[in-house]
Length: 210
Image (cartoon, rainbow, N blue to C red; front, top):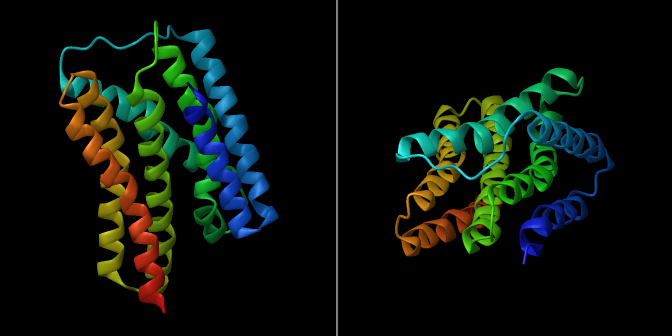
């Protein structure tokens, strides 16, 4: 029942490693894994884990934005960026393996510790897919914006930043909507579109570069 949640990120990372064929991704992979273990251990020993029972969308959204999106995306990548002595290009290109490894441990931990009785289809199927799509799209946009900065393409930079903002915020929106029992059909439809757009973005970018 939990296999999709547990295997989606590791399998995606393996596919990525097979695609890029670069041994240098080992360092960000190890960094992501160690960071996830430390963070999960700190949450387990020093916080009380339970399912949220907030009254408003804004409260739930803020919780998920901070704990499951903002902190992993910005804090983990920022700490790695400060500690690593690699080039900015290397750090940007390895955003995906770093964060995918982190979420491979962290997201299952969040789902499992928040579920007191049984797991919802949203938590073990749609949620991991949405968070993986977030990492894929942000990774694409970071690489594209890095190239745009070198080429001084201001419009491309602005476009990439806007997409990064949307993709960084939406997973928390989806989680919050699900918690307040919003229409699951709409959440599912938007989630599928959200998850499919990185694939469309990838193929379009390949076609435009030809």
